Length: 204
Ligand code: AR6
Image 1 (cartoon, rainbow, N blue to C red):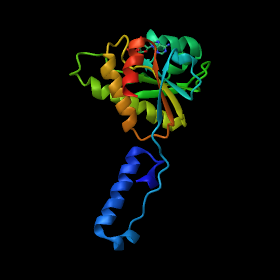
Image 2: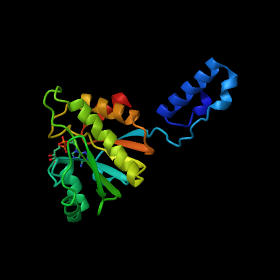
Image 3: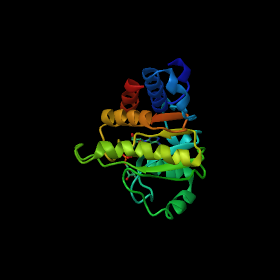
Image 4: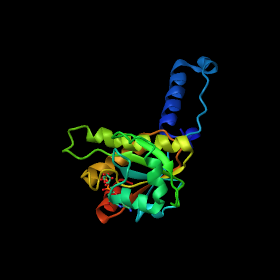
């Protein structure tokens, strides 16, 4: 249905189904249906290889731990680049549960916001890891919507210290973002090594 070409996938499906239902029931019922007007679109998905702390996007996502008080990997890099004010701010947040996300200012980063999410530790895949990882992406986009961030960059949540296999994690990341209704216009998946780059390149 070309007429719905510029709107998000989920909304488009709802509208298309409504129109089909009308068509089945006959033209007389058209006047009794009011179509919803929703200005939501699917984000454009891009792949970038390099350091997420250098990106001039509205928000970068941090692969944090439940304390939100910093660590190694991308978490350490983000805290170093943002400066000590980020840690001070994080101390006021009371941590974050696995699969959830909290937003802070970006302080000295080019990005205006940092969305801190806590991925699952890989325990073989049967301890709820896929659902928790998908939740990280959904919840991060929800925080982005709350602060009006339209361009958002994600590292491979859980794929470093937390040991999530990159191919499986990349598939969940892409699927979760595609399935989320959001006002974010661009999601950039950031690869810090070749294996991560190649896993995303297969999917995008
Ligand atoms: N830019 C982009 N990606 C990066 C960067 C960077 N500067 N540095 C690392 N990565 P990890 P996790 C990639 O270990 O697995 C921390 O100590 C990295 O190559 O940072 O979720 C936290 O405090 C990998 O693909 O996060 C937690 O305790 C991805 O970022 C724990 O690690 C995630 O690797 C979280 O573990």
